View 1 (cartoon, helix red, strand yellow):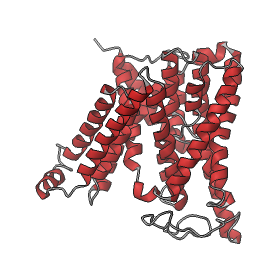
View 2 (cartoon, one colour; view 1 turned 180 degrees about the vertical axis):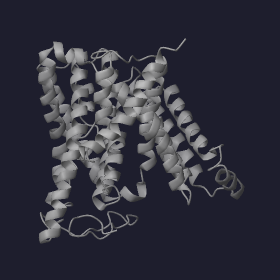
View 3 (spheres, one colour; view 1 turned 90 degrees about the horizontal axis):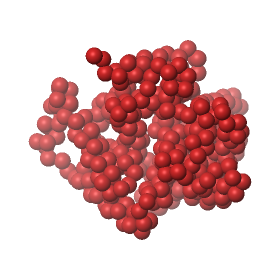
Length: 426
């Protein structure tokens, strides 16, 4: 007898294969494949064709997909690359977004549209770094100076809300949660320091010998670290995504060296090739389309929340970076900053489970997250392309930074020289 979850996984596998083909057919590489994964997940899910249904096994794969998405975001984090001005500006922008989100969320709650300002406010301060990474890399933007700023914005836009969720959306006393959070951070930092120590030649030799064999030992060690830090975060009552993000940082430091590219490719193959698509398809299957269709007020919330995403994440970016980026790159940066989805799904689910958010509000927020992934990266990349084309045709366009770059502190590495398009010539 075929288990009930196997046909669902077969459909998910079909969607995972079809989605990148549809991206190619659109001839617009700026459209993330997750858009089709979410859309097709909604179509085959319980609210439309009823062909696929979630179960314990499917949800388990989905949870691992989300954890791996956060892990890969942490793995790609290069603190040496974003330290100094990019990280400082990103932190300033997120704090401004958080303050703006609190004020706006309180105003929205006073209208009766939503119940809890904390859940709404946290949802509106996220940035989907894990979703943006493949888009930026495929468009050859990731390794540019502009990509350096986007990396910092995305890092703070994911780490900040994850920590805030652990502090404000748990049932435990906030002081106890903060103490446990410091304990977890200390443990993660200790693991990171251990990873950066001079590695024993014998250990390196064993790992290298098994990198291309059937043992795949470095990959197994990486997965073990994910599970260990996720388990530690769970046992401490913190959000497991914090453990996955920290595991990515530790594994990145541990795998630094001549084999780092190979290890990254293998881990990305597991994540983007297997687990992450399951998460996005299941998100589509679990999307509460019924609430949106049968409650017109929820449909009206979609344009409102979409505007709030642009205001809360976009406006601070326009202001904070006005002196450091040309005008032609400010709007693209604001659009990338306002792109959010995975953490929105998590926060909305927590809000509904804790009876702090109505299902129709959660559905509207997730719908806006889907729209942000569909609209903002594509529009941002087109803006960068227009800016680069104008710069190459007639010299530098827009307003260049008003002052030359000087290191924010003695350890900051100056960025590479920029070409007329604002993209590093390297």
